[in-house]
Image 1 (tube, rainbow over the protein chains, first blue to last red):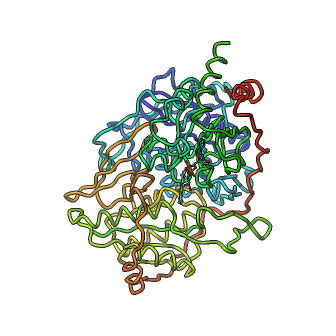
Image 2 (image 1 turned 90 degrees about the vertical axis):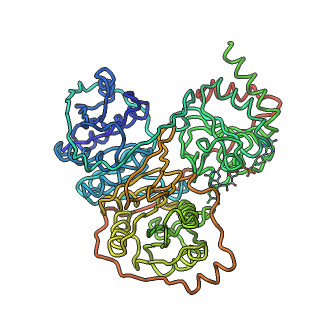
Length: 323
Length: 249
Ligand SMILES: Cc1cc2nc3c(=O)[nH]c(=O)nc-3n(C[C@H](O)[C@H](O)[C@H](O)COP(=O)(O)OP(=O)(O)OC[C@H]3O[C@@H](n4cnc5c(N)ncnc54)[C@H](O)[C@@H]3O)c2cc1C
């Protein structure tokens, strides 16, 4: 018995979400009186791999799939499932990000393992195994009982936090062969957004809605975000209109985020928008309409015109930084 | 080429979510049911592709696992433009149960491309598409924001953290689609609504499958504390509160 956590890497590096996953898996392992093992696939240097050991795992498996350097869902599923079986894993943990969403359901079928997806906290119990997960797009939470002997959990990003613990992790290197005919994906081109803080990774997010009035008004919003080290986001109509890129669209049909601070400027707070941001620790709203539903979700609010308030916020943050 | 679009029937996205039976069951009283938003976009893209003769798509079929009460949603999908529909007559127990029923449909009817939405807005699982692909041993591409078929080849954009990849996989495969796949959902025209009345909905009985999971209760989110308003003339105070009280900046 053990808990296996799959930690994706980005060009050989881990992110906060990787360490959060490992922290989570280690705590789940404690609940089951067992230990957690991290699995990394691809080219990652030893020093980077060792960082996973700071968050409670006992073992780190570094697997390389010969001749494969892209994500192929079938080859990855087979590799992870084989390692899980060999390790006797009874719980598998993945992120609820795009990669986790691509692999977890396939692993579920292969390992006959029920899934709790998008969990935000530790299981409510392990016998029976009950998880607490988002339902109805954030309007409720479900208690999901997983009936199978092997379970898969996908963790919502930024929902758990980091727990440092050095358990003295041992590193094991594995070279995996997969049958070439299994790999069906060809990647023709990769387009990366560079120099931007990723919305899903950010601790602070500054977001604009239709109340920003025009795509030309975004200057002070972006400046505020830069000063705070924040990512920028927007409501759906803003990205539909092409005022901002689609990668910024937040909400039920866009990105689901859980930053520590979400600043909503000129956003009404429709249910579908809140579905994507309601897990934020703090929500700040700026809106001309004191009855806008966003104020029901916010802890702090300013009733005022975005074009007047934003420059003042920028000034205030500059002053704060100068102090 | 035969295309299958899997459709989930969900409460309208503005529904005030409530539960009955000691918080064990979703309260369906007064609820409006709609096509899951991602599935609506998926269907729209499927029909856009079929409109282009170069895609080689001959038919777009809808599949739904659910009881007869979902028929209005299926008729709506037919009115939007799908050619026919298959309903597996069963209460969807969990994602694995649903995927297993859909797999049976695909095995029997032999589709070349299956499209699923990335999430359903009720259970937020993001599971059915991937499970279906594994059950069928088909390739799957997840987080698909663009899909086009040209000269018998699929051109697919898949979103990755911080960018996208242009990928290809051979047919048959499962495309799990998300935002961007179509701009606006296609709306049923009067003619479509008339035609939908006579389009076939084939009802098939489920195969025997044991679910993996079971929802044993619901909770409502904790109410948030009332909003503290800060005067628009005193914006500085907000920054002070965020820095010294909330300690988040
Ligand atoms: C199936 C479905 C899925 C959806 N998914 C999403 C989703 O994922 N994300 C999403 O965001 N939406 C989504 N929507 C749309 C959602 O219902 C709302 O229409 C949308 O969120 C509104 O965006 P908004 O707040 O920017 O605009 P509006 O609702 O137009 O609000 C603008 C706000 O700005 C305020 N304002 C106006 N002028 C100023 C000013 N000068 N200064 C300050 N404030 C000002 C107004 O008081 C108002 O509150 C979805 C809808 C459907 C039907």
